[in-house]
Length: 362
Image 1 (cartoon, rainbow, N blue to C red):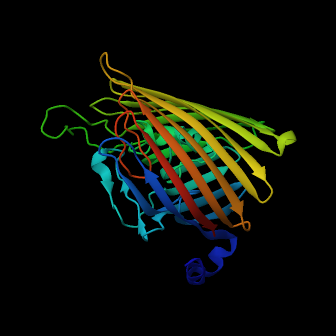
Image 2 (tube, rainbow, N blue to C red):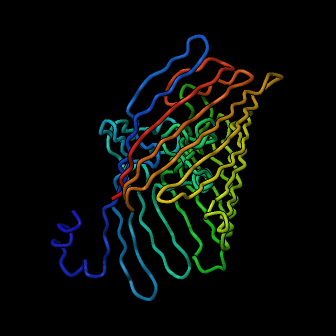
Image 3 (tube, rainbow, N blue to C red):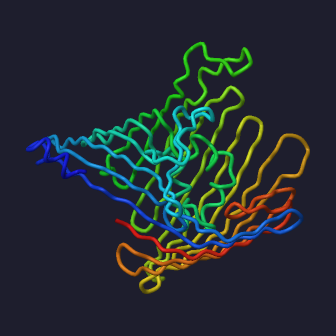
């Protein structure tokens, strides 16, 4: 596609770089719940080590240190060949395209220079980055993936838990002595007379998002704090988190990382914490994480709490191809019903999972 485009415009491509990139990651997974009504199953899953995707990105040198760029990235379900839905307006009503190929992961045009980078379009929210970067398993679809992201109010199931559409973002330049940062505002695009269906309650601000992320990287140490709010007439979603990591070069390059996470959706609060390690061993790496998430519902009721322990190993066959395996154990208390890989777990019971897969980058 890039070659055909360059042939059509001739010399205009001389100063432009266009890349096709992606990941195909597929695994065999077994997960089981416990207790009355629980289920277990074998399945072929995707994105156990890294999210499967197909993307196109490019930059053009404008001279004087300025550049223009674009980035289009579509999520893939490599186990069945379908895509993922996207969201038009950062609200539940805006979810479209389930099962179709959409550029749900990122769709931006950018302008950059010594001042930093300005991005327009659908992009990652500031608070998502801490969840992804300070967990050895990231936020992939595997059984080891970030428990705070999957269990939290502002994670996987939130319209702005990962990305925001209709956004304007600014990134600090990389020459600030290790300091970096990101600011984002996004629009829900409701008109001034918009109402909640069947009511006279205004929801003109629903889906409007604002977030901020600031960090510092110095040698082996990295720390980042982020916060964001999405407005809804039924109760705003607020997410804040702090992530940090340290790489011990004297211990074979072991990276210790962690995240503290707080959130609220209207009157309901949630909080959690995660610690993890990534230990290079020869051509592979060992991963391990422990996370706890607690929900604080309204009233004098128990706080549903779940704990997750994950252990994995990745063996790199080459720079682009890897084999991996993961074990996970999840325990529920105080009425929590968290599970693994789409199975059902009874309240206050445990879930277990095993996963073996292959990932190829291109």
